[in-house]
Length: 158
Image (cartoon, rainbow, N blue to C red):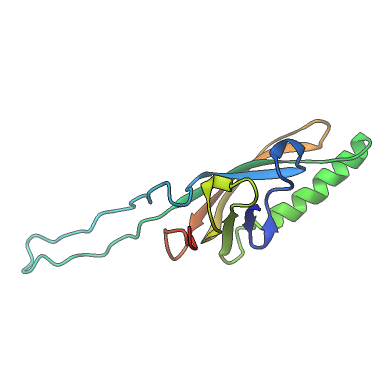
């Protein structure tokens, strides 16, 4: 259900309101957004046959936004839980790792209107953390990924 990256679930539960952590795909939606063009084909008009120069490939940026919160009976338990969950989730987004697979699954709620799993190979470009609040037990995150190899989602049969 929802999103996974490198085998790590990015949504805990059926809804964000009851979840301990929850990330949504905000930009680069499967089947909805075009790729961004990095450059143009360069033509050399003075050369016979108008040879094409090097082409810089198009790219697709993916943006995930979400939160991680700690759960527990007292502030210390919530802080410890938040810290452990943050380490688990952020381990998937290390920038020095090889590209991984981002999978969006429809689940029971029809996530992103998908009928079947959609997946794309991506690498982490940037991880932006918000302030830690609620006595060190809640934090918002923005994570930028870039599609690798292809700029198109594999939409399965949907």
